[in-house]
Image (cartoon, rainbow, N blue to C red; front, side, top):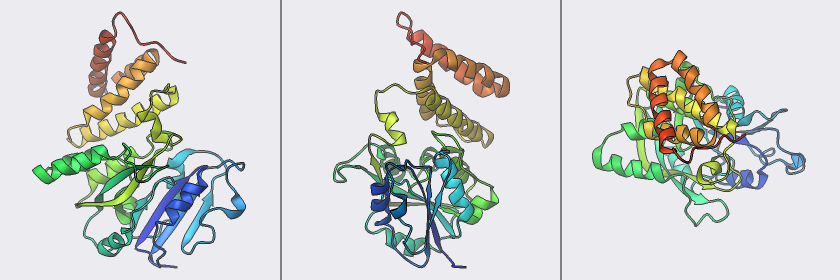
Length: 309
C-alpha cells in the first residue's frame, strides 16, 4: 500500500472541463493521493469513457449511482483516504502554481488543522476577481493587526484552503452532512473547534472561482431561493450555532442572521414552523431566532414578505 502525505478529495458533477483544469494544478507526486467522486453526472454532458483523472497516476475515481450531493461524495472520499493530511477542493476551483511548495513545507507540521489564505477569481476569466474570498482576506488582515485567531478559526467554515490531519478527523468521527446546501460547515466548525493546535499561514494556497452554475452562486444573485436551499442553509447553520454554544464560543450571529433573513423573506410561514420546533428542542436558540423573526416581520409592516412555493 502506498504511503501518502496528502489526500486531495474532489466532488464532481457535470463540469469535466473544469475538473481537468483543477487536476492540471495538482502536482503529480508519489506522496499525493487524489480522489475524485462523481455525483451521478449527466451522460449527455460527461464522456465517461474519457473521464478526467482515470489514467492519472495516484488518482482514484469513484462514481455514485444516485445524485446525493457533494457531502456524500466527500464522505466516499474519506472512506478511501490514506494521506496524513486531507485537502478538499471543489471541481471548479484550482490550486496556485506554487502549491507544491506548501506540500513540501507542511507534510510534517505539528498541527491538527492548517488554515491558508485564498484568492478568488471568475471561472471564465481567472484574471478577474470574484467575491467568494473577500471575507477571508479581510479576516486575515484583521488577524495581522490584532493577533485574534477567533475570526479565522470559527468564521471561515469552507473546507477548501485548509489541511486537516486525517488522524484527527477519524478520532472525532467527522463526516460531511449529506444535504444539497451547506454540507460542509459542520465538518469544518467541528474540526476547527477541536483542533488541539491550529496553524495559520497567511499565504494563498487555493483559488476559489465563481460561475453561474455553482452551488454558491445563489448567495450572490437576486434569483428566487428555493425552499430546499433555505431549509438546508438554516438547518446547518443552526447546528453550527448550537455547537458554538455548547463549547462556549461566541456564535457568528451575522452569518446566521443572513440565512434566517433569507428564509423569512422568501418563506415566512415555513420558517414559523422551523421556529416552533426549535423552541421545543433548543429553547435558548429558539428564543433568539424567534425574536429576530418578529423584528424582521415588523420591518416588513405595510409590505410583508410573501410566501413563495
